[in-house]
Length: 136
Image (cartoon, rainbow, N blue to C red; front, top):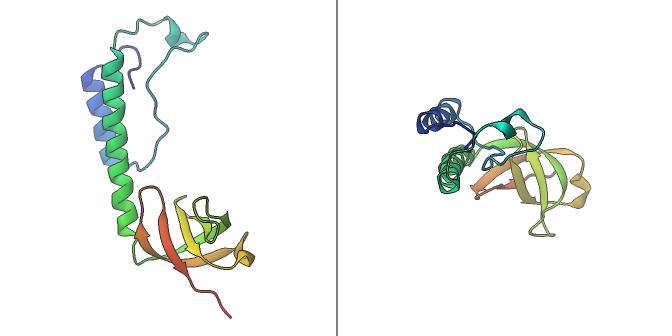
């Protein structure tokens, strides 16, 4: 946030676009000069505090969208590519659903590298929890 010349109206237009599209993730940062780029020559008159505040507002809005989408997935079945052990609990597996959301669940290690159907049971801040049904 805070590209040289960005006005409050420009920023508000960005927020409206986020709402219209329903973005639920982004790689967003406070603007900083990069030597050798055309923007490095532009006057940067937006105070750092304003840039930080805009970034916080943007990321808050995107996080709210992500939470809403994740909550709406509770009770649904998701096809998940099992990637390996969960980062937070080695006793669980972790994988990614079609929308790139991380899904953690209990299951045998033999599922790593496979697609499985997982029923979403909870929405966490940055991941989903679920249950997988494994054939005997």
